[in-house]
Length: 232
Image (cartoon, rainbow, N blue to C red; front, side, top):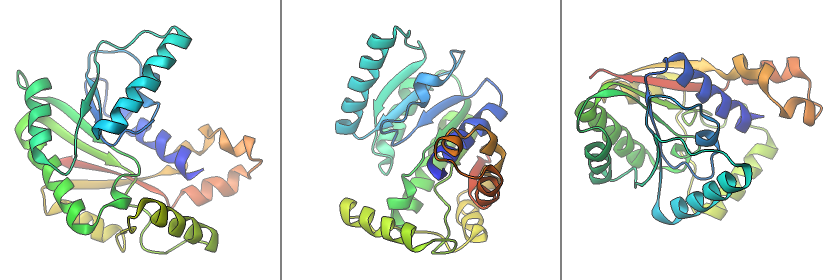
C-alpha cells in the first residue's frame, strides 16, 4: 500500500504544478511512470547508474514493441550518479542550456539508503543544478518519511533488516518533519508535506488484498510526500 501510494502521490503533485514542467527522475530503476505519462511539450529524463539504466532501456523497448506504444519524443535516458555534480552539470548543459525551464526532480526509495552526508551532497547537487538551469525548481520525494522507528511494526522492522543486509546499506532516517524542513532550508528550499491519504481512493491494492479502505486511508495520513521549492 505504501509503495503504490507514494507512486500515485508523486504523480498527483507533479500534475498540480501544471503542464509546463520538465521531469528528471533519478534512480528511476524499473519505474513505469514514463510509460504512463501523457505526451506534451516537456522533457522527461530518466536517470540511473549505467548498468541499471541499460536494463531499464531494454525493458522499456520490449514494452513498446509488445504493446505498440509510441515513444514520447521528449523522453530520454541519461546515465547519472546523483551524488556527483559533474553529471548534473552535463545533463543540464545537454537539455537545458538554451532556456531556463520549470524542472521537477523526483525519486522514490533512493534517499533511504543514503547516509546523512550523502543526503547533504544530493541536496546540494539538486540546489546547484536548479540555480544554474531552472526557472523554478521542485524536488518531490516520499523518501524523507518514515521518521526513525515510529509507527513501525515488528514485520516492517524485520523487512528493513533484510533489505539492509541485502543492499549492504544501513537505513538513515530523519527524526521528524521539522528536521527535514531544517535540512532542506539550509540549501535554500522551502518545503511542504502532503499526506498520501488523498490518493487512497485510487489504490488498486486495497481491493486486491481485501484491505479496509477507511483504515487504509487513516494509515496513509501519516505517510508524507515532500515537495521542496528552490528559491532560484
